[in-house]
Length: 335
Image (cartoon, rainbow, N blue to C red; front, side):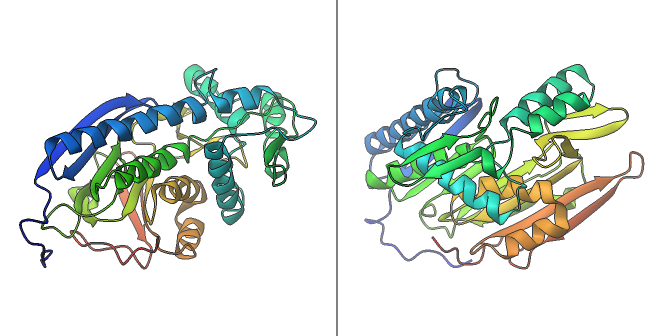
């Protein structure tokens, strides 16, 4: 493996890690810095940025900007939003259009209803499902450019940025570190991972991929990641069995029901915002249409793994053309 050609004076010597529970999951930030003090300041600044964004993007916090915006629906005119909210919603709408609605930031009423089903162990009543679906879709959210704001058109609608907000926060944390002069960093939000420069003397950060725990060891891979992001979307830790059928916590915005499992898709992308949203969309679309979606996205690759049967389980795998081999650094990413 070819090593970076840096002099010892140029190589950051201090490896610093720190963590915090944010957005409902443990976060870890690891950096290489000129000194321990610089590294510690960077780690804390990155985690502080994620905590700040949680107060904007969370759909679990009643006082977040997202929750307050949803509570205002329907709005007669556009509502001003923060720069961060505008950026996330703009990207979310782009991925909704690219995925034909498989990813949708207005899915909130359906995810709320599906959470109730997961707790009760029963599918949603048809009348409730129809009412929730009526508040979801492209027409429910309108982005207004001048003056910049958001208009919510449907009663009882609720925005949900769970499939993109964490990726956006990873990207912002890396941007904070870059502004502090730290160029070699890894931000890990419990498996959603973004990286800037590689560790000193290496080609990339080593990222282990175990999409569906319990499947054969051959399904586990390791890739080298630098200046990109990788996310796995699946039901490995959050699933429910209803009527003898396994469903994911991930809801198909077009049906309102959790997608079939066990299944997972891992996406490599130039930034974590894209990896997060595209992994969710590709999981909903499945390996055939999902593969087409990822092939059409610049700088992206994906790997689909699913399991059929309960006894002698059959593991199926589909990769996009740009998926790297085990232990290889991905194709050059475009940022």
